[in-house]
Length: 498
Image 1 (spheres, helix red, strand yellow):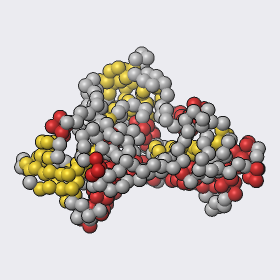
Image 2: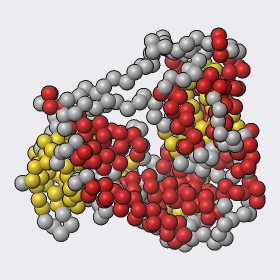
Image 3: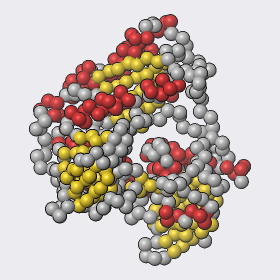
Image 4: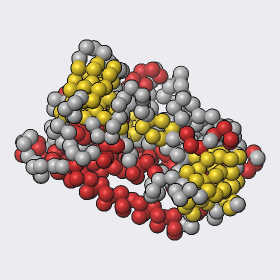
């Protein structure tokens, strides 16, 4: 039996980052991947495909140029599913090639097959040809990701009633679509297909959507969706989905409405892909959604030597945070010190338009009792926005009145997921409103919106820079829930605890 310092199950963002980190520390590492190619859900059905689909749709429809040339403007008049898939395949091939090269360069072994526990430190691997083999590891990291939740009452057929993984294989673009689920995945795909001129209806039993985003940003976002005739049936539940003889699909809603559409996309949640792992043999148990509970500092499960990272551990379920979780877990697993990442990380929603956020929302400021002021900038107020033909988009900054520190940055509009990193840096470096007022930004750029929003807040705060209190490492903005000023190291050397 082959023995490894670290066995990684899954080659998505968490798995590949963990494997490469451990290999760079001189450890013997193997990655077990059940898919046909490495990369996991992120590369093949999730992050990369959905963002590639979005970019292709915006390019071929001429979406970004319609502010100048009108709504009828299109780069390609007849857009097919094959047009979308062509760019997708090129992108995926590149991602897989890069990942395979990283594994080879760092001498990470790769085994294709389905892994399941025999004992807490031993896995059985079932290969495609039916052959089985066993591997043992000092530590094991589970980075198996998630799969779409598929309830029994939805008649999935892979053509007209599909989940988010099947969306990439559709044969033709629907003229109408119902999306069940107003979470991140549902909203991303709903807005992408709306940009392709598909008539989209979104159904969700909750009366609100994306509740973790600042409410003012969501109000602006919702206005933009309704303005282009997307139907948002919030607070309503899809009771029955039925395929009709003519190939269409009927969706009955508990409000009494019945919607007939070409396609139904069910995107109401995902499940941890832990079914095949035989967790009881390792002394582990997943929750009702197939997720694993871990120590949030070390990502070790309740069983010593077994770690989990990425979407399988739940929120925030981002590729970026999954990578950091994998890196931290790998360092702790092989007995190295692992520092926690910076407190504030950005959340990106690749809808049309994009949304990105970092730090506290206005609602959280109120809950914590922190006196605050906001600054707003509209993209149309910037010269760059006018050059690009933007008439929508906004940036919102939230500052503490006590320390004048930036505590939240929230953006909706073109380039939001790129622009947010300026605010993220200022947040983590404890910068104040004066940074935005006194700093020089390239002109003309959308980043100039930071200066506009900073000036807006500065004027409302009514205190000049010379009179502003200096923020210190000991300053806090909440008496109820203090904000930590310095990340603590993860409780580290696992070897010491064994």
